[in-house]
Image (cartoon, rainbow, N blue to C red; front, side, top):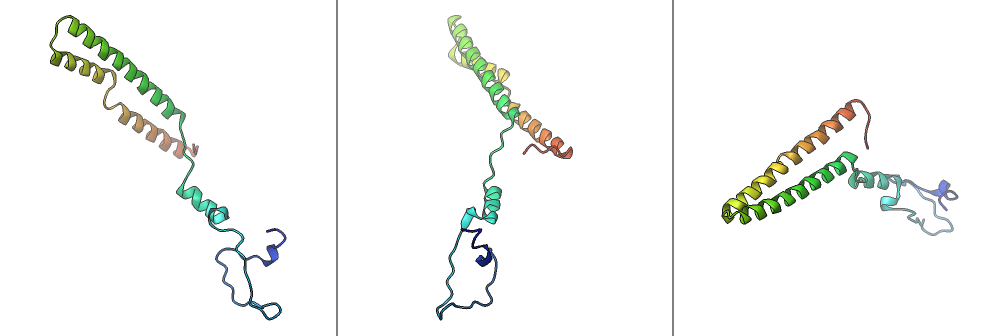
Length: 132
């Protein structure tokens, strides 16, 4: 029991300068806790392996990008169907479909969302309203 044996316990980093053996034998020590189960260990664990933080904005952004990708897929399919039905060449049809995808889901959208998240976190830290 750590509370009962507190008088006889040594904490991490303590140097033993002298020990008095009882009844002529050497002094014996027992390790109670080691690793991440100590206070210092739990502090190190929280630094090395922090709990993942998930912003609601990131989840909304993922849903938005998924919705845009669905629209792009539908548009791509429809464009190919109509273009081939009207007798267009396969190369021109593919170019039209791929062009539609880049119009619906702009390539710079993920970068813009990342910049928005970074800016929001910096602004919140300036106001000392930490989100963690």
